Amino acid sequence: MSALQKPKELNGNVETQGAALKTESCFLFREEITDTLRSETELLSITYNAQSQFQKVQVIETSAFGKTLVLDGKTQSAQIDEFIYHESLVQVPMLAVGFSLGDRADPGATGAKRAYIGGGGELATAREILKHPSIEEVVMVDLDEVVVETSRTQLPEWGQGCLDDPRLKVFYEDANAWLDRPDSATGTFDLIVMDICDPDEAGPGIVLYTKEFYELALTKLRPGGVLVTQSGPAGHLNCKIVFTTVHHTLKQVFKHVVPYSSEVPSFGSKWGFTLAFNAPPGPPAGSTSGTAVPSLSAEAFASLSSAEVDARLKARLKNPDEQLKYYDGICHRGCFGLGKQIRKALAEEGRVISKTNPVFGDE
Image (cartoon, rainbow, N blue to C red; front, top):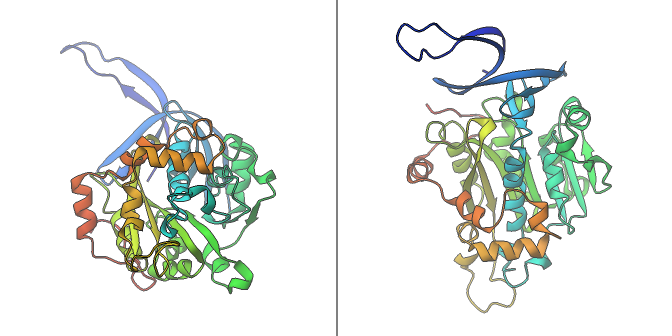
């Protein structure tokens, strides 16, 4: 677990044998990456400290990562690199919406109009979705109003005023319960984004990683719609904790599933995401071929050329070069270029997360 450490004397390195020890004193923020590996950085200040009905909510500042939102001792996002996480989580699937409909000739015509966010309390996920002019409504459902209000007041750079955008509707409810209602109450979506704690941290929220939840989410997607979920650490030492099981669970529900990752320094590891969609039955509009269209698979989307990704971005955003700090065509190829050993772990994973068997960890 992470800890806001009490003042501690730190003995500096001994440059030569017998030399006097150099001593410094500082506060530390310490966080586990695995059971045997942790990160540590200088803690400059604790600017906000509260206990909501559900969790401990803190805003701290560290020398390495700047302002940081911490929930129950775990880093949620940090000023220095939150844009990497949130662009990875949102801009990749936003570009995939409509891909299975065969929109490669005119990607601007199939941009997402309605999106659902499960979680997203930092407001940066909504910020990223709302960059797209095609979006008419974003429904964000987060259980903890304290996190959202803390982000609004203490971390305004994250949301950038998105709560004032009339396209954003926020509900402080259970994300699963809100969605698990008739379509007449929820409507359907072009994009479902799950921006929630890892299943090994989420307690009751683990239901949002289960096969049953993904089956529900599938019924709420429109033709050409996409689901994406943050999928926990995806590094060599920790990819089996969450990443591989989420991927395998989604494969039980969706026909097209593809994992990807980005380096998020404040998380201490590469971070995983999983994108999933079903191609609609039959060939794409205007096609005379059969129903099998491998060129519209998730793997085909992952393999798009840098030029085609950049063209899709320009068709869907007003000015992607200015609006995005991380994601572009070259970055796209890197995100999906997982290492051989990670691909092997994904292929060998056999566990499925369900309500009756909420497995996680690397046992």
